Length: 300
Image (cartoon, rainbow, N blue to C red; front, side, top):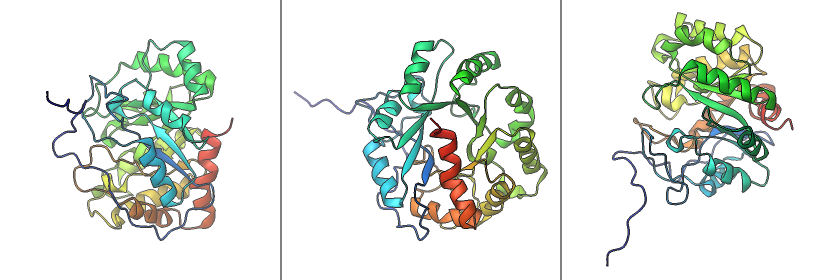
């Protein structure tokens, strides 16, 4: 009798997270938060969604918390991965086992009940994510997203938005009309080749300035860079411009375990060492890594 195989097999060519990242030279300030990371499965416990666009390797809460401690961070904000769809069980399980050191951003559908929203809030969720990247999800109708936004606003949650830079012109009015604070993933995914002073990035900066409750994750140089590791120097001007313009509304995270990376396997030690290049002073570093995420995720 043959043994049963694994419940899920990761996609061919999937890049598994780094097994031994470098120890960062930069020491995060006490209480630092990795404000953008994920958990994947394990798939035999928390199955991946039938509608998923990719099947990853497992990246468990134990792996995530071990990395957190190794890098010198204190807390995590775990963002629901698209491979889990609107099944937030892996996310809630990770938060429940974090000793109060994790909060979450969930994915919900239009039919979510008020009881479920309250359960998610009690479980540590403080936001929902709307994904507009076509290669990852089927775009949801605007009316559905507006309805979800109106329902989560009384909970004091925010909305994380993930989009491609070229789509901001089309989506800007819709985003600005949403009745909750906004958090933009990965600096709006700029085209680094165009430069930090390009009209495309100027548009993003104008979007950030349009409301005082729009936040930005200055994350994922590994995804944006044309130069590549170890320094991702071509992304530094983008991150620094955002941090210096909006020091009280920026966040940082590892994006572990780096879903859908194609070019290389990121070394999280190198990603941590990117931080002082975009936030060069101790004051900016504390705002980016401690004060801002604590205000947004641990206010209650």
